[in-house]
Length: 58
Image (cartoon, rainbow, N blue to C red; front, side, top):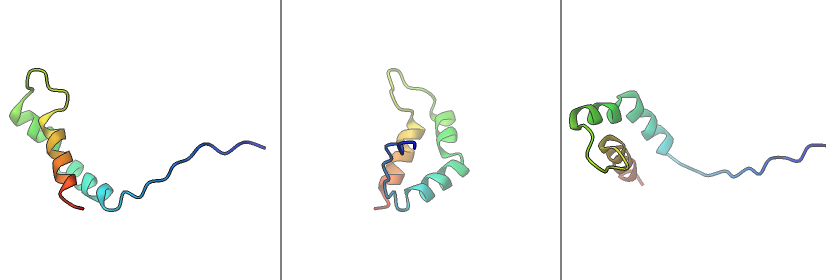
């Protein structure tokens, strides 16, 4: 008999829906194209904006 994998489940609530809409409208790609890369950035401007928008919906 196989041992079941170590599985962790998290309730993400609405975050999947918000992320899906932002992906569909290509928010990250559009913002990154308009703003361009910044020296030394670890996260693109578009990705930071996506995270900020996701955080707005508790």
